[in-house]
Length: 546
Image (cartoon, rainbow, N blue to C red; front, side):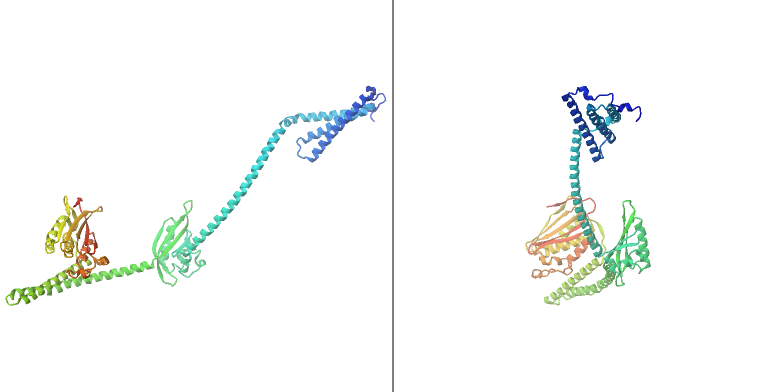
């Protein structure tokens, strides 16, 4: 042993610590037991620190905690046990060594303590930790609640996605059904004109499958390969549609039986969000029936024009061929009557009157038929002028008024104006219409009947004249035949009335050719009301209705 440390372990000159207590048992044991309990307590604390460090890797300030354990164990616990030992054994050198070791450990611990003191001070208190724990617990609860809500939302979203997917599938099925089952030929093209889709109608029309045409330029498909001209038209249309133009024209289309169909063809561009053409929609609508009808109509029109020409030539010939013998009959009948008036009996003179009267009626019929034919064929030109409606009406009323004398038919003129109402019409033809209507009103009226003439200006610039009678009227089931040629609405009530059935048909044609309309209302045994309208000209004056 070193000579310097030898005195530390030499106990010859020392006496036990108990001598200081005069070996007083109570005092001695009080110190001994106190040091024992304190030492054991310090050791217990040190072992607790060791246990804590072994079982908790997350203990903060781990180095300081280890040094603290050494202080408790060495500085505190060991020195108190040495205090018990030195009561009976004067090994004060060993006790000094323990104290020096304890002092060093305590000093190191103190040095380590001060730098971490602010951190220790900053550590949250128990109350703070409890508050943090409470908040964390609340956050955990809220998080769990949010997770449940997210799960619920996910379930709802999944159901919505499932529903939307189902709706999209149904919508796609409907679209496919409409796309494929429509009677029109529909296709979808790239801007370059390559066919992407074609509906079943268009494929069936030429007996093809989709793979036969998909990916090919539209103008090279079997629909259009029957005509180089049509192929050029389709290609040109695709180029225009690719530039954003809507293209539509009529074209010929190859059918399933190899025949030619007429189609109304169109190309419509579809744009994306940037305004660029994304694809083209082609559509062909079968208009073969319409085109055939147009051809038939054109042929019918040509035939009608030809027939009209033949009819005009016939009428021109018949106008001479019919009138010449009739004029001879009328002339010679009249000459016979004048030359032989003193030589013939009254009966024979009456026969001559019958011949003359019948000839006049036949000539009148021929003239009316020829006039109607000229009107229908357009051979009779209208001489339009500004016509004073009041003057024409007054003239016709003056001429026809005597027709009511025998049957005591009263004529009421409620048509009057504050000035002149001018019409754009053919004066003679307008007068012919008014005369026809007035003559019919007298002819088909009843004894002691009445004829009323009214008129008014309409909002659309026409004068509407109405001639109403209290005659026998027209049965409802014969209304549709009123304006037919040679129609006299035959029935028992009309047998006694003369007429050729041409006046109303002629009048309606004349009114329509002057730009107006004609109609009527009638009830059997109560009378008829015939009206016609003609366009006004110049300033319109009010027509006063009595």
